[in-house]
Length: 119
Image (cartoon, rainbow, N blue to C red; front, top):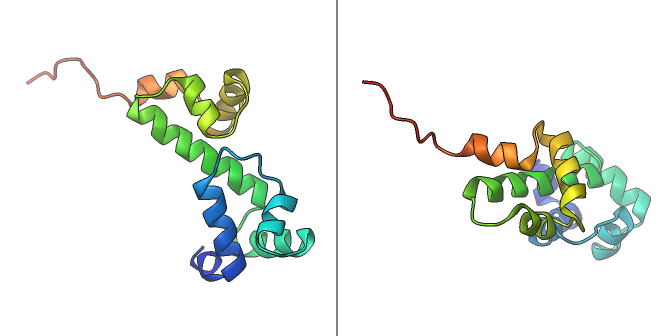
C-alpha cells in the first residue's frame, strides 16, 4: 500500500477517491485523471493496491459511511448521498453486502451502551 501511495499516478488516483468518494468513479475516469490508459491504470492499481480500482472505491465508501454512522450526526440518506449513492435503498443494500449489517443496525451496534454497568 505504501508503494501505491508513493507511485505518482496511483497515489494521485487514491487521493481523488478519498477527496471525492461521492463521485461516480469509473476506471476510465480515474485513468484519465492520472493520464494513463484504462488497462495500464487498472493493472498497476491492482498490483500496487492489491485490489481492482472499483473494489477499492466501494471499500473506501463503506469505510467512510461506517465512520459517519458511528458519529451519528447525519441521516442515513445524507450519508448515502455523501458516499455516492442516489438512493438510501441502494446504499443500504451495498452497505449490508460490504459490512454484514444494515446501516441502521450498524449505527445502533456502534453506540455506547446506555445500560448501567453492574458493580
